[in-house]
Length: 176
Image 1 (cartoon, rainbow, N blue to C red):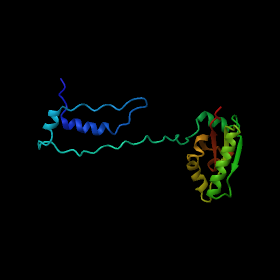
Image 2: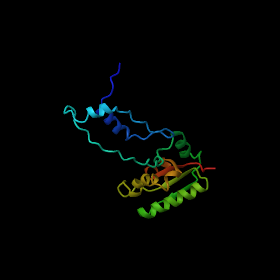
Image 3: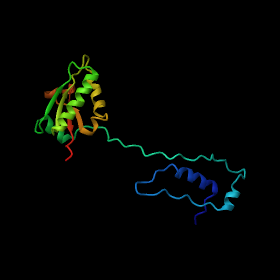
């Protein structure tokens, strides 16, 4: 047989339950009723530590952003590298600084997606010591807000398309 919850346990549970967001379409659970005699008995018997009475502030549901792009599925990557899925467009970022490259990439991907292109090749170069800034920053740019909804995934290109200095970018289908 279960023992009844003590008033301090009920108060603690109501604090915890107040921080939980219900699933869509569900209501907040009602806190259990505390009998008046139990409330009076639990005022301060000296045996239990006092629990701070803080009202939880309801938080608005955080806006969920789409997940950042990830690597292309292996089968699709293989088809792109062998050009069975055609590489619709190519962008060479050699000679661009970071700001110019980011703007050019955004315009390029928006234009390609609007035309229904499914795969593109972006050439960043390897940089002077093999650690190029554009090469390092491209994955960050692909996961930012204006570009993220367009990109299904990306990965380094095969050697015959530029190797570590180029990326295959798979684009999502256009909504109908």
